[in-house]
Length: 159
Image 1 (spheres, rainbow, N blue to C red):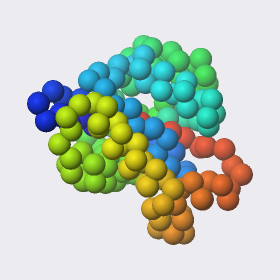
Image 2: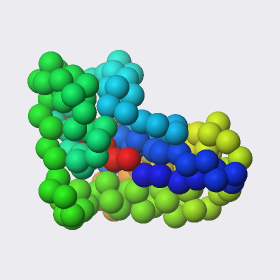
Image 3: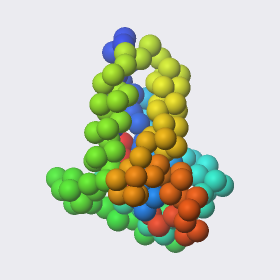
Image 4: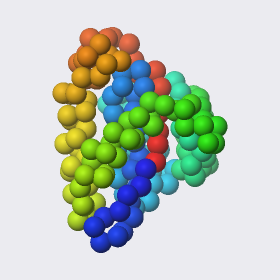
């Protein structure tokens, strides 16, 4: 996703979700998010949650970059690209992106990237720990995850 600071400077977000648990694992915010940066975010998540068997993503330049593709191959992770122009193949991330846009990106005028990161961080806590999800029987994702012993199935990525 992308947005702009109050002064007009553009920034992007990398949204990483666990589609099985419906948990937002990370939202990385910066002016540029190339494939190498995506890999760093996934490496950081590895220590916390392990690696997925597959990653569903669009065909953005960061996801078709050699750095990302090679890293996934070395880790044994299958990349499941959605077809261009077929957002329904990634419906959960599209729904999440809409919610994030409405509740954060369109609701604030950010002065700087740190402010966008802080507001996003607080929103993620609410989204994951307090907000009930119908698909999870009315439980927040972290509560649902704690009740399940299974590992993550796939990540979804979006910028």
